[in-house]
Length: 278
Length: 296
Image (tube, rainbow over all chains, first blue to last red):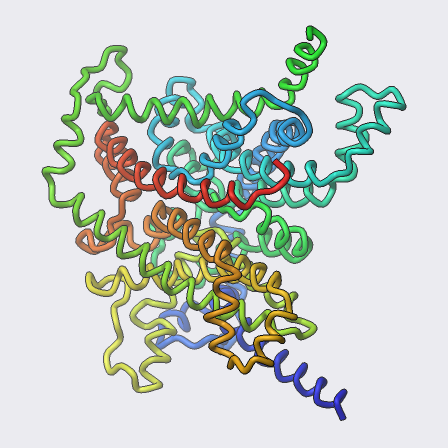
């Protein structure tokens, strides 16, 4: 009898939970279903969720007439290099701040923590002037360099927690085997911190992928424009063609959704460690 | 002694590249932004070496226009409303998903996706849903709650609410996740003994659970304040501050001055005003978290 009661409770809670989730993720469904609507349905009457007739012309249009793959590739290049830059710089730093008595450790940590909380607006104009002087406006470099400033502190805070938790014996074992400090770091600590690395990499990638303001400000070259800036531009020119905009949005959101589904457990854990968004 | 010093200088090599990078691309810009706000830099003289220092002139100009006060009021209203909505709904959802059933963790995880989405995608879909013939108006009319469609985004009186709704959608999962972690740390035994003492559900919640998860509550409120107060992408892409400045916030105002009118110095000044608010709140946050942190 008791088991049966448990089962009923489980089923009822699951159904309510699924309903809450669907209601909450309703906007995602809207993006997806609207991208499959015909132009006449988008324009015609009051809006419903499901398309009356599934139609792929918005996608075909984006691929054929608007060269969406170019923007996709640009986003990918920016996000990939930004992630690499961020990881190369911040992983050793987080290790140093976790395992060594680095001078001014507390102040350095405070600096990284505070940079996450500052507004982009604060560094936007100076970076624009800096990049203009360095002549790297209208290149991939501006967005890569600037988005890394968001993911570096994030990665440092996540990875540092992981390196702190790693057992001290590992260090001693490495020393006994005659490893240098860099070898201990590279051969012992890096492999065991894989979950943190996956979290950091996926966050860095998504942060750079999602960036709009840096790309928009530091780049006017249409051929180098990432998807976020591309869809913004598309919106201002073709403002009412919502089915096309939503087809664009599906392709913009897709990598984030895929990364998210594949790495959900790392991402949710990482979110708690870092509890931050750029 | 010499040995120790040597090791230390070697160890700091791990930290220097990242620290140096941040000093160049964040530290220097922050200082530059302060200098900029005391200069008169526009598109005209941006290339020239010598710029006129004008003292507090930019700040005087900004505060002599009523727009800064409208912007400040908008930013605060937006922040406070978002905090209230995302905290209360986030808390309710955290309570629900903390009931133990098999797929609760999975569903809770899926909901986080709205927090991870590119802001421009969020902005576009809410703009679409809140448009005149959009699904929100459609459903509200079917339910008989309204007779005429509401012009959510294009009406001065409602545009801010459109933004608040969209931003809360992004903020709820974050609140939910942090609060539910707090909730899961409340030991079952304490709840059980309160039950035995005859405390009903709401009493257990207010008098036992809430005090126990106070650190988590403070964290989500402070972080929520910071992220909402510095909002840019969402406002910029949904309303761009309009209609008639009704959604102009500090960050979009700063952007407008710098990159539409090319009054770089005035834009920098507004960004500094925004930063001052955030620095104050950030310090409160750092104080709170450093108290919690163990193993230092």
